[in-house]
Image (spheres, rainbow, N blue to C red):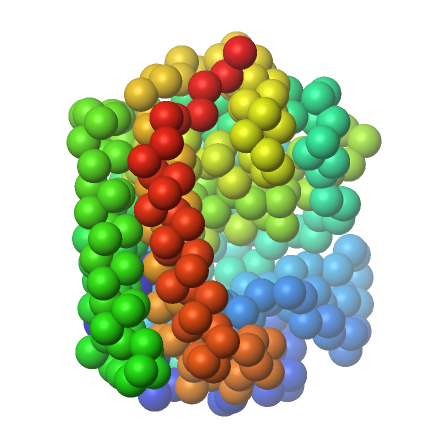
Length: 332
């Protein structure tokens, strides 16, 4: 979600390890002192050892990003999926609530679920993933979000572009080239959406890449619904596809073989695949820019905002412009 300004003055530098442990104790969980930071940049997520029982996972939400109502709507959606035996990880309900506060930080607690990355080159894995995504979308289509946004051209393309340009992130000698190519890319996105027509928006995972799927012998479970929003179903499918066009067509066929056991797929949405990829690229650059005064981002992404970085983004968008002019990917 692109916000309209710099992050809140309260930031994660004021969340030391002692505060994390004290936050858990404030809601009745006594830690044994073990604290492991997990891979998350938007929020802060920790695995915390307990004096009794298995470790828990605590997620501290980035200040100023979501309203309480939007976070609770995400929690309710994940709980709705869990109640239908879809493999997701809902927040623990304590005294009737899932969202807690400590020293100005909002946080939620989850049971720890392990797993490995899915092997997306395997046909059975892709079908299995497709079946569960079909079940998620069948539930997601039952009612809309009211507090969480919709994935659209304005919020994922135009607003991120404007943020980058108005905050002078683009080097002066590349500014004209970037302005030209990003505007041309957004024109291509609009044409793709026009070709797709009036496709249905439903509640999505929203960021269904391989890092947000954990695999066990019992199959996949889906984690981190932090980017959950309304949008077209294909948003949760296209990030599972990779390689040459023939490879992606085969993968799409295998995903949809499982998906359509539980949810119909509107093939018009295939016009949106490269458009959604383009929006993600623009949005991602602005996401990094908006978080750039967070020291964790500067350490994790040292290549951001260099001359080479913006040269690569211009080339990347030019490639997307060409891809959006190609016929959409169809499955067998």
